[in-house]
Image (cartoon, rainbow, N blue to C red; front, side):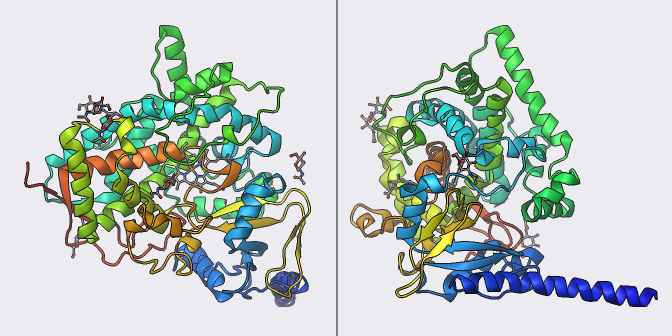
Length: 525
Ligand code: HEM
Ligand SMILES: *[C@@H]1O[C@H](CO)[C@@H](O)[C@H](O)[C@H]1NC(C)=O
Ligand SMILES: *[C@@H]1O[C@H](CO)[C@@H](O)[C@H](O)[C@H]1NC(C)=O
Ligand SMILES: *[C@@H]1O[C@H](CO)[C@@H](O)[C@H](O)[C@H]1NC(C)=O
Ligand SMILES: *[C@@H]1O[C@H](CO)[C@@H](O)[C@H](O)[C@H]1NC(C)=O
Ligand SMILES: CC(=O)N[C@H]1CO[C@H](CO)[C@@H](O)[C@@H]1O
Ligand SMILES: CC(=O)N[C@H]1CO[C@H](CO)[C@@H](O)[C@@H]1O
């Protein structure tokens, strides 16, 4: 009897899995979309789910399978997603018809993870619009000038540390994460973290915990992405309340301290405190701006201003962790790795920086944009290694995509349908960037940059929902690379991998086996 019930249950389950598997295929076929069948339950994401390949490598297989399609079907687990591969169409979705695609896919629910879920990243529609308009003034050029001091101080401290450890093999992944974490501590939370000297710093440890998911967290993440209702019902949380409370306490204590003692420090907490009182504005145009325009230029306030609670606004400091930690750390680490492997690029960059330093002792905000080759090196690092895998957008109003190929039929997107606008894979497509594996900053030189087709280089996303902090990120990267290249020769060590391959653990951009280099003294020292 029990055996029969078991057989019945197993058969039902198998049929159910097969049914779900076939349903997506039928769905795409009916709509005339090309797709790869994938594996039941995993869809096209089998290898990255079981951890034998990076997420990007799974996507790459689908991206390359149909070179003549403007978009194709992607099966993520059991969900059908439209993968957009045509730059022209990406422009239409992220800029021209943005009104149909305002929101990101919901990876975190506000009720499940208040810090991630309550941040601007996950906000929707008008609420997002209002928050974006409120926060944007905190990220304009003139505010970045203030942030630069915090970055430089951390960078100098790390340079000093490295001078005491010349020619030792350094684990750059760790070093760079200490830099970005210290910068977040200082520029974001008003803390002097100094995590390189104070190795067991609590802020550093808790910050790192947010990004190294253990098995339980991976499962929770999978659940809240695949079946959010069930996850919510079960009260599944990705981050333990302890972590959440740690950050909340820091923020609350800092604010209370500042209010009580009338302390003013020009960091993000300060800017956000002003924003919550509605006194933060910025209409100045800075000719030295780097990065993409933030949204206040594109989004008009809706007139009636929303009242935010201080909690709601201050919660946005956490965005530095959610969106600004791994992304920056990944690019800087890869840039260091590339410089160690590409000797000529590093020497050319060194010459530019040395020249600058000889006339101008320290790097100032005004001078950052004048370092043209540095800009090219950073952009080339972002081309190959941006953390932006795709720009996910959820369709809000029924929308007709043009036919995927000549003679095909248009595709109708319904509210709730998800599209992924590809970023890295377009950066690495030889159709747009010849010899994409080669690290060649001269792609961005004055002579060459016009050859880069629009919407084929978009490390910070595109349109009104692009990265709010691209200026902050570019500055943070440049300040550190400037100091490193000026003071040291970044050299290969025993464990430097060449060529660089992506590790296969999760979404983050890291080199397989880690990035190890030596910082050798420059002969002038
Ligand atoms: C190299 C570093 C960074 C990269 C490559 C990067 C990339 C991106 C990308 C691709 C998006 C989505 C854009 C889209 O869908 O069109 C995004 C959004 C965002 N990023 Fe960044 N980012 C970086 C650093 C930062 C930093 C330092 C912060 C600090 C606050 C930050 C805050 C945000 C926020 C708040 C959003 C969401 C904006 C919205 O939904 O309105 N990012 N970023
Ligand atoms: C930099 O180092 C100095 C001296 O060790 C220290 O007082 C300061 O707090 C450090 N700055 C940061 C941002 O960690
Ligand atoms: C580098 O990229 C940034 C945005 O990421 C852009 O503003 C800048 O113009 C680019 N520089 C060059 C030389 O292409
Ligand atoms: C640095 O900036 C100042 C002020 O903008 C400018 O006069 C000077 O030429 C710059 N120096 C270099 C080396 O670019
Ligand atoms: C570097 O590689 C050697 C083997 O070649 C290994 O024994 C050593 O632990 C590695 N060093 C680090 C810091 O991982
Ligand atoms: C289906 C859906 O999400 N509809 C939303 C589209 O956007 C408007 C405002 O921007 C919302 O009010 C709808 O709920
Ligand atoms: C010699 C030189 O170029 N000095 C400049 C260094 O940068 C500052 C401002 O950032 C200028 O005021 C100097 O003229």
